[in-house]
Image 1 (cartoon, rainbow, N blue to C red):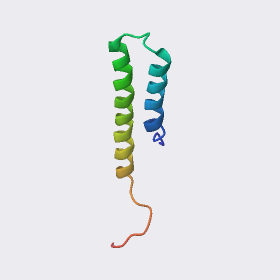
Image 2: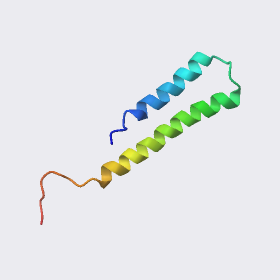
Image 3: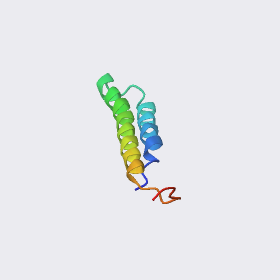
Image 4: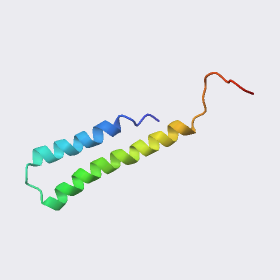
Length: 64
């Protein structure tokens, strides 16, 4: 499953939400959106890394 694009997209969505709200949200809500978007991106990165390292190499086998 290719979810690597979410590592860029989630913080970008968080930034856009915060930029277009321009102080209409409370500090707690803004902090939740900011930290949440970065946290979700970190979780997606960990999931993608675990999936990557769990795959077996389909290339050259040096030893039997």
